[in-house]
Image (cartoon, rainbow, N blue to C red; front, side, top):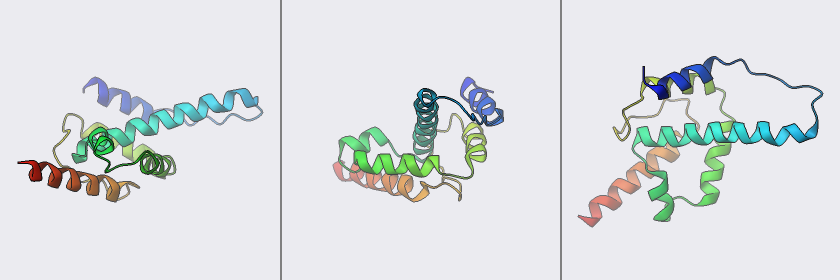
Length: 125
């Protein structure tokens, strides 16, 4: 098991902690951690699919607004645990053009970006 697989495995098994009665000052930290986790998951999913999000943004194929919407879709996913396990199972296969799982909220987005970037790359040859 690689370090990446181990970390995803651990994250998938951590209990979801609900904080009742906490001060408002703690809310942003929890939200930031949640967004960071989902940003990492979204980026990892795109890597596995073969979509380079940085290249897509630089080329104008992915706007900041579209990335934000994809991140929000990811945070609302009901299959987060299954996704972490799926990502761990496919660790080390970046760029292999793997199809995302059916439940992925960003399945169409990542596949369309991959296809557009591949077509763009072929057009340069």
